[in-house]
Length: 160
Ligand SMILES: [Zn+2]
Ligand SMILES: [Zn+2]
Image (cartoon, rainbow, N blue to C red; front, side):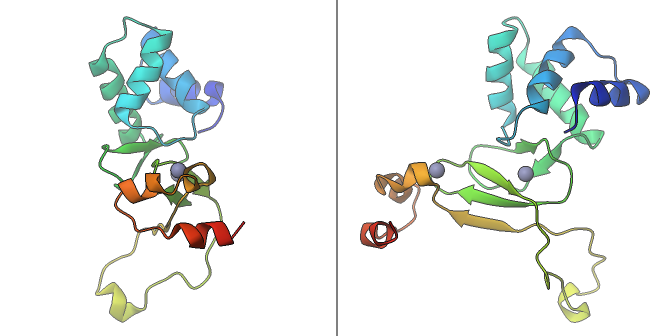
């Protein structure tokens, strides 16, 4: 997402009324890179504006998605849809233990389908996800194991 002023004027142009509640949500989102779930946005925003309703937050996120200002992240975990404040095409690095998502902005050459592989589909976009264990989660390795991934602690230690 760009600056808050750019965003506000763009939303006004498209007929979205900027209420104080929406403004707080937008101000939170422009600085947010963690790909939060709607519930996480609600928790954080309600600490700034205690009387904001969950419905307002969820509806606003849906409206922003419909307007293309937020991008849904493909389901990476069980904790519900996550919202991406970066709507440019990009890839993801995902921690399987703590569900942190980091944006990767790079073109991967050769990432395309042959006509046979595309099976007649008109391809619109593609997105790669790299699965791993972030530095914080590498010790103890048991956190990753809890997430259902088999981790050899010796393999992790030998890298350091
Ligand atoms: Zn992690
Ligand atoms: Zn992203």
